[in-house]
Amino acid sequence: MELRHLRYFVAVAEERNFTRAAQRLHIAQPPLSRQIQQLEEELGVQLFERNARPLKLTETGKFFYSHAVHLLAQTSELESMTRRVGNIERSLSVGFVGSTLYGMLPKIIRRFRDENKSVELSLHEMSTMDQIRALKDGRIDVGFGRIRHEDANIRRVILREEKMIVALPIGHPLSTAKPVLSLRDLIHETLIVFPKAPRPSYADQVLSAFQERALTPRRIYEVRELQIALGLVAAGEGISVVPSSVYGLKRDDVSYMELDDPTLTSPIIMSMRAMDESRDIKEMLELIYRLYEEEKIPYVPRTDRGG
Ligand code: BEZ
Image: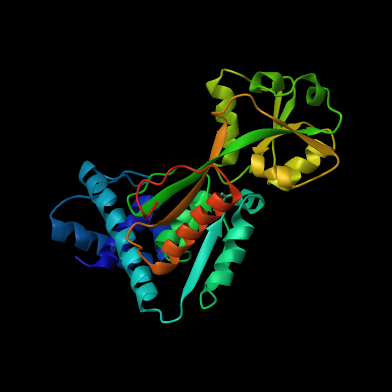
């Protein structure tokens, strides 16, 4: 059995159709069918149910699929790690979700560049889930996101829990009613959440906070990104629950109010390949904690020297 067989099998299992799988693999359908047949003969098992449309995996096929996916992820990790180890010029590709730009990210990047002049740093905006895929296939080396996602090939470090606050149109009655607000105070408003896609996203963290408290906002308005949410708040379309670093984005048509519940937070998570022990990643992590100390920003205690 060769890696090619695993790639072909995974494509067919995921597309549940030989034609689509062949298109995805950029090969013709007859050789694909032959390779799958060969694989079944070699293993002496049936991987797909006969005559089921769309294609369906047998129980053996499901077992083989979960291991094949894992093996392929490890292979691609090995490829990108080896390239990285063998790379004489140092480079670091960083993925980030848009909202981290309002927190410490710009400062971290500036400081990293100052302290590591020989490292070529590149920045790529992408969702947390895209970061996981990009880490696995070597397009980025570090990701900064907000979604807690378990994956055996990815190491995650929860850097800090960022408080959520409320953005209100200037002069909104809630901004003078009380010194701090609760989520219950917001249920008569239109709640503007972001990003609308891809999911899960920060939007789901806000929506879950309401659901967990059995609260339903009057209306939910999903928008593409934070800047649009704030613009709509300024226009009086509704209110939004945003990470507290947005305070830094001063606008004279939006006011911010704290929430009374300290558990209303959104994490900032650094993700990297599980086996990546490279110097640049260690330096990035050390630098982040140093900046937290310097700026007196509360952070999640480190569990080991790697985070
Ligand atoms: C922060 O705001 O703490 C942060 C943002 C991006 C990357 C790392 C940390």
